[in-house]
Length: 106
Image 1 (cartoon, helix red, strand yellow):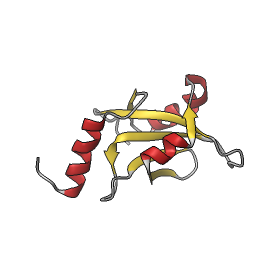
Image 2 (cartoon, one colour; image 1 turned 90 degrees about the vertical axis):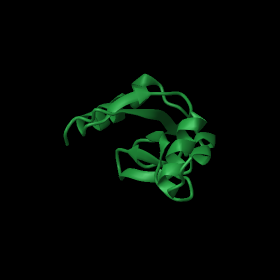
Image 3 (tube, one colour; image 1 turned 45 degrees about the horizontal axis):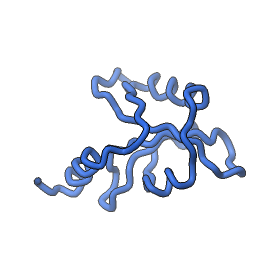
Image 4 (cartoon, one colour; image 1 turned 45 degrees about the vertical axis):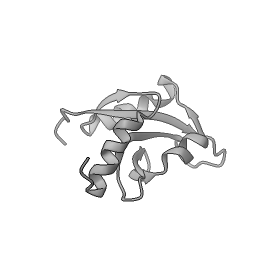
């Protein structure tokens, strides 16, 4: 994949589920709505891209440290992402993406 010129906002989290198989670290794309009902994109080592409910993920995980998310960040950069690590969702950016997915002109 060619290197992305777009800076992608990413929140790295660690799943609280103690029975998790594989790496519990995942990446949320807080400003990239992927479905009509408002789910956002997410990424993990196993399974890679998927959709996720932002608030559920935040409630059931903790912030990942740079050491915890290092491997996942490197993997994502190796497939072309230019990552901007953020701590929380900017609701205005989320709404802009949500309206674009739904075809609503504002």
